Length: 165
Picture 1 (cartoon, one colour):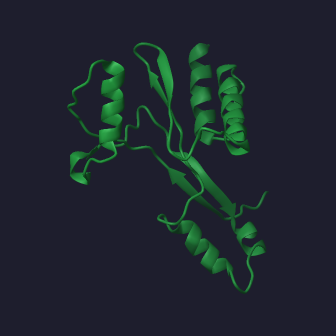
Picture 2 (cartoon, helix red, strand yellow):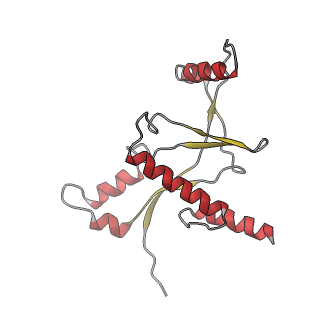
Picture 3 (cartoon, helix red, strand yellow):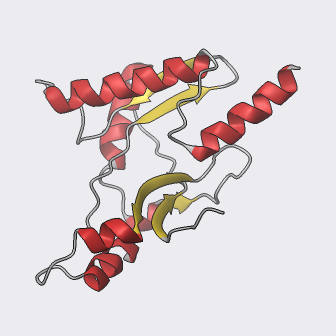
């Protein structure tokens, strides 16, 4: 019989805010660029928070730390209880950032929705390392080799495999 250990796990689910903007432009590209800049200046009241779409998105794991590791990393200046409280505080500083892959399931077209933190004019080791991890994981999934990093992905993969039989 194996003993179980306590873990502290931060989960996240995607919700989107949307707004409609009317712009004047000479073509689609200019209209999209103008709207993107205008969106950065919209007041909070212009945005509508959409409900979580459980049919399209799974929650995912942002962070997972064992109780043992919390204790092992504790000291007088950073006691275990303080570490646990920080981990469980949802508004604390986070090191995880998101870069979105937008897929139009109707047309089969996709694109990357870049964010300010990523992909500067002079990409460095961080961007190269992250993009390598992303492409490796996508390649593994699309070739039916689940990496095991996301339990939700394992569940999705299992349901796809079950439907293929």
